[in-house]
Length: 449
Image (cartoon, rainbow, N blue to C red; front, side):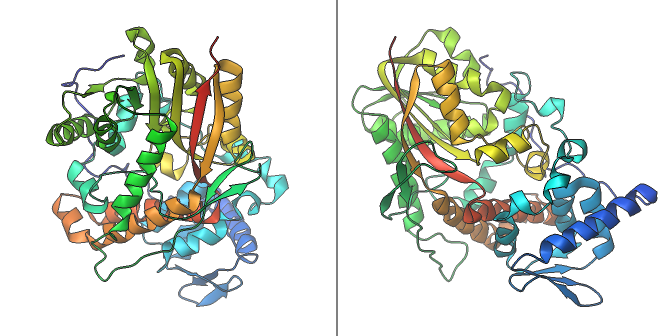
């Protein structure tokens, strides 16, 4: 499905649905009481401190501090909507934490065992399901993408570095070999943890962030064998940095996106770099690629598979397989989660889905390997794991986002939007810092028929 440029995008000024009020009644009272008991049991096993106001009661084993300003509301929201309610209680100010990412990292590391095993079997009965209009079908996908990426180019400029790369950077650290394990399928490389760098002005990034984003892209281009004359397909344009760097190597690039705002700025940046004649940017769903009849020597995609939806992972990789020329290579940067957690949470509706990425869901490396082996001629031949680098990338984004508060408000966003995005960035940082989620560069070659 090729989409006309003038097709209206769904632009949401605040990028979030309204918060539902807490209602009383027996059901709320019972669910809040159960949530309180489960929360206290979980906290008692964690290296955190929870302070209940106004009594000053302290829970936990000591560590990063969470303050419950309105405990009754917190337990009611937690009981009614689980982790979505946990996040919503932060949005309303029912609880807070000075070091939000540091606090969230502790429970994130134990996420799979915080709820007792017998109760986890009831998950399907109490966990909200993904709404049908969030499924990443051809009809829904542009609205899902637009919800986030068409908020405002100026907003993203406030906290990203000058490359406008909205994905994990790869800092200048050593690479170590690691055996197969959770989140991997064979011996692979792991980028060692980068040193955090702070500066006096939180509105500025360290000079190495842009370099680290460039390093990430250049490695992917190397893995895909992009050189002079290479025909490159990029699925998910972003703001054009990968396309610019591929064109600077002499490649000819076809890059597709579903974001109207990203397309317009990417075209401006590509033209300014002098590569308008080498790069074609198109508003297109990846599923429309097969019908074009075009083939490519290299296919690259940076953190786009997360928006595909588990129902369509096979379609995604079969499409890549179909458009890849003989001898071609594929390089994908993917956010992943452990296979068992992926199976347990499939079809769940999460706080991130509701407020940030409608329809998003993370694959495991194992399921990517299963799908490509079972449904395509693609074969996973290289993995670079770099989750700690995403934690540092997010830490810098969050610090700069908070430091740009007045500029964010000047764009027409409000204080609630600030809390939503601070929670999103800190929540994501905690996921990578704890190892609950990960990110890898995955390289595929093709077994030609």
